[in-house]
Length: 92
Image 1 (cartoon, rainbow, N blue to C red):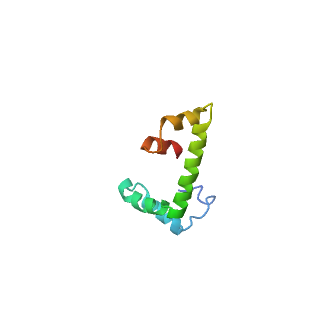
Image 2: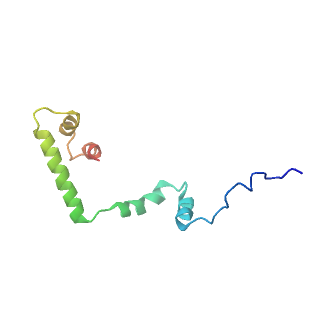
Image 3: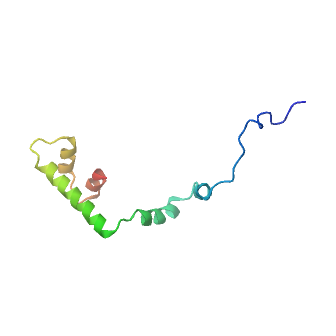
């Protein structure tokens, strides 16, 4: 007699999905417009941390711009200021 599922005895038992796995399954293929608000909220930094990061970024950019010989990164920083989206995107 041929078994319908001959390899079933070798397969590990299927466990109940964890809450995290259930959340991932529910979120699969959700529209971006539904996902982004909660992700943006979760990615928001407290003001003191944002200010510290901005200060560090400013200092790094100023030092790169002051170098006499510009490397590839320094040339990009010189070309695109942090006052526009392109410059900010390059720093990210």
